[in-house]
Image (tube, rainbow, N blue to C red; front, side):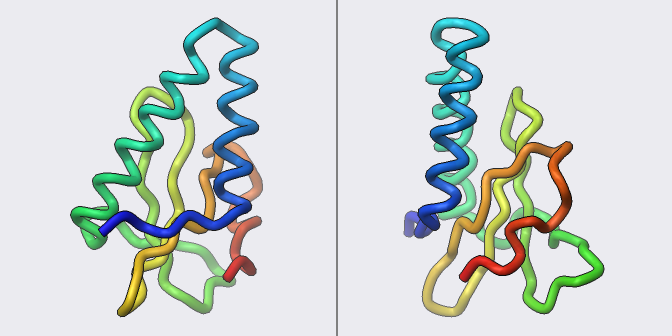
Length: 101
């Protein structure tokens, strides 16, 4: 089942795509393809990736690396669905997305 992507995560993907496209033509599309592949893998094997370890977390999130780019897809596996909470640059403030639900 394809995970549900939060609006904020969709916006993060779009911002990153535009940034990479400004760097080099076609790089934004490459980023989108890599993120999509990561999300498809999460949908097929939601428990494959490690738990996101944070001091303030009250829920269990997982993190999946995006191939070729310094980004992770942060998601939560719930009983009824898998939620993509954030697509975060690995150098951003940790757990800025924590309150999303």
